[in-house]
Image 1 (spheres, helix red, strand yellow):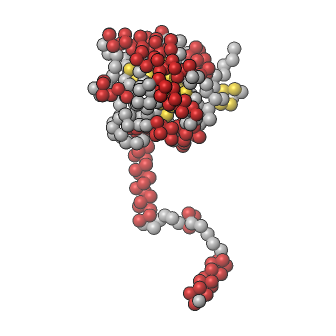
Image 2 (cartoon, rainbow, N blue to C red):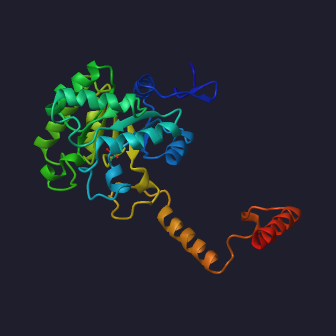
Image 3 (spheres, helix red, strand yellow):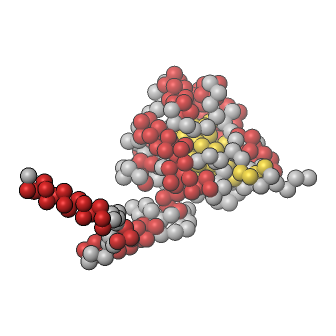
Length: 297
Ligand code: KIV
């Protein structure tokens, strides 16, 4: 029996596909996912061997500075998807459909989903919602576009939910989320993000489904985990959800670097000769002589 991870062939990383994700679910191997919005971070995540990169509409909050994700447009998403696609060779790339890009009509949903693959370089799309989105999900999948679902705390419904609160803590609501998850699986989703729901519920749903669940604030019983990379790196300081683990404090490190740069420039410690373009003494002499001619002429 092979002991190789489905991500590697003869020790080399190979492109993560839907089949890789299915195989990991079947084998009980944990799936890793992180968000990215630009080339350097996508490239580092890809290098680290993370299975899935999500170009999340969290872009709106952590990169563009909006209070929520509602202002993010298709053009914003595609611009950042292209940068991510240029940086990642191995991870499966999932583009997040922004608010109002799939709710108004099925036709618009298919066309916008297609743009993520055609113009954004993504492999799949993600959209929020349960049974109320089945028509759009089925139509997108029929067009040959893989779909990842998103249940529980769905940030595009922040106004309907009355804030960024955990979901599914009451029995009836928990049942709704389970039924939504089963419906999304039947519709053909290859995976579902479960955000901010009780750990017991996420574990039960993960056990009932044949497709992979990816949890955020949903405990360790999911088939995989996702975090917003700017939270993980400590780059976003407006607030930190309880479920985030910070693996670095890059904002602090950035402020320190910018202050050191300012101090160096003010003290004339930067740039030094090693950061400066050189010219030979002979060329300089020739130049100065020409300058004299120029001045005299
Ligand atoms: O937009 C996003 O980053 C997301 C993740 C939190 C799953 O949807």
